[in-house]
Image 1 (cartoon, rainbow, N blue to C red):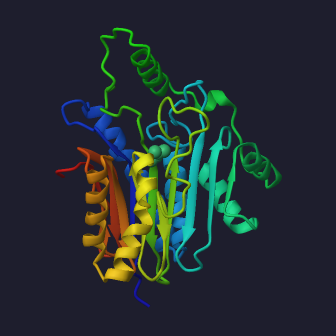
Image 2 (cartoon, rainbow, N blue to C red):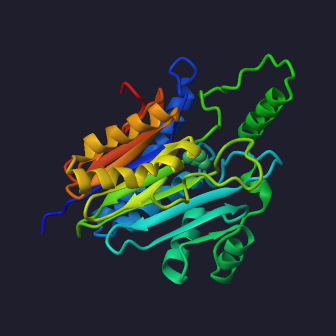
Image 3 (cartoon, helix red, strand yellow):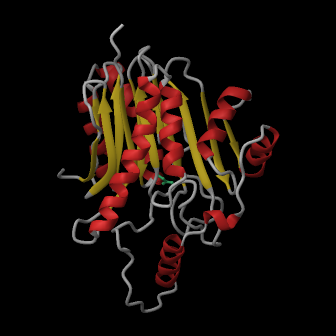
Length: 317
Ligand code: GLY
């Protein structure tokens, strides 16, 4: 049987500006994206499931300091890390989600564990970590999650909040202000199954156990074999109000719109509400679209007809 697969990943959307990004940072991100999507492609080429491909691709980004998920997560107002993640199987509609976990090395593995081994969809905080411990998931101490760059972003935002006159700009060397980066993957496997996985450290300076769109099924992540799989990145408070990921699927099912039109429409709605971000989406035919309303989104895509993944950063690429 001829092999047919498609896969797309994102490593966050935002004010990613050509003039702010150094050659080295550009190269590092492109390499990180390449490594992530390759992990997913290898699984799909070997006949593995979309679910496993998405998990593998997200783990690579969670393990990299570059992206706001796992290691590299942004800091809360209290100087801690609180991570959110979710995963969904388009065939069974089973899904798992976690919010506000602090020391689980790979939040996406915990979301998958909840989907596969619990009677629940969403576990949060200490309860989620207890469940992870019961099932032998890897934990790291908080030093593992500390990165200078994310700490600097928090200090910059705190200084602004206190109205201290700062000469530094909120944008650091790569133009990422840490406001709302996220990582995600969507895939179609050889059996025609779709899946989506998304993981995030949330927003710099978030307070009061704030939860973003990433673990809210239908907001930051959704998969349905009858329509599409979607992973969102951007300002969670807006994505949650629009249920952006489910909205793309609903427009396809109820209005018979194409993946590209429904995805573009979802981003228009985000813009009209005042939110910023982007999505990656894939349909049951393997079509991929990656619209955004920001200057950039770290992203990559590949299908069985291509020999190399397409890796992109800026909106006009
Ligand atoms: N999109 C990530 C967040 O807002 O938490």
